[in-house]
Picture 1 (cartoon, helix red, strand yellow):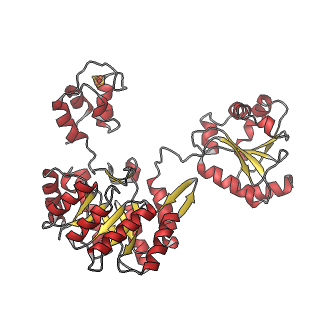
Picture 2: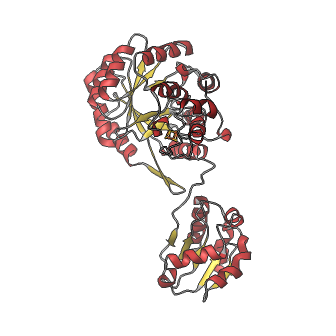
Picture 3: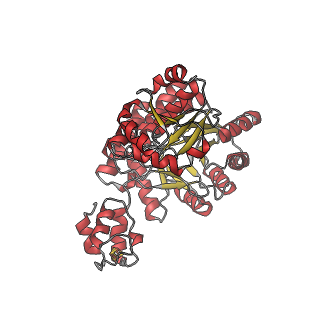
Length: 445
Ligand code: SF4
């Protein structure tokens, strides 16, 4: 049961000492109730409070940290739908390699995984993990492939085998990589739990149905190991979607802890369209790790873009760093544009300037990641604030031109900007970024 702020406050020392960063114990209790603080931030919390609040403050879906430095996080979700709040940790995408693949194909795929970078609105997106599946019968070869994948990519692995002893060997070969062993059954749970603990990995569990999965996670948790993932035994996209939704709903709405873990799913079809649909479903609902069958940029790019859209916190717009950006190869007398630091705005405007075949300086002041009209309405994109930024970055020493082009939607700030920037002429540019190319060609070239 989730505790309210008032219930939590009763368990705190009530001294209002402020060492947790909140002004009062009640304020801190409210933050704990909203899962915006950790109990460890209060140095005076009693053992009783730790026991009660520790369990109550755990996210309904456990956060699993992967990789050698535990930087890749999955799980920790608190809502069923993104519009309720936000999703926290995006689905990790992995690309599978089989131990029966040819040596040449393995080398090529590992290097492709290592080097793949997709840039979207200033974010560099990479393949998060490598799936290593044992299809042959040589445990040492499986372990050697796992080690090679780890050495080449330094990405955590999803080690999959039906042979628990082979998994133990591979787990030891990549000790410290923070990988996932797939998957423990009732029979192999103790053996694989020991391998996961000894080598710093997480463990996926599987069973014929959800009841079996829940009973296995309970057994492992009661045995002191809780870095767990769920691997569902499903045979169709519809069944996978349904099972995954039931598990997530049970964890979030019924606070059923045995299913409160992220999942790992393997895409098995070699039909790229079916595989992409299945992976899209995982990214949307509620995959923790999705292992793709092959390395294929045509599949990765749309999946990563979709994932970026779903997992971006709508309350925190993606921003670019406020500064003066060169677009193309501008000279000191090249035109100067100004717009806001909302990533999408920046990339669209800079792209349109580039499309015009012209070079320019693009001034991006701090606007808290808002778009042009929102920033203007919030007072973050005014003549005075732009002028202040232009002076603070020394633009007047950097360029000889004294004309600055503002977005057409904020033509009303032109007077204030000219007043605040003596010696500069303000030119009102087009309202839509799509008209920048024509504007540049007509006015500047
Ligand atoms: Fe209260 Fe603990 Fe915060 Fe002090 S540190 S104000 S005792 S919650």
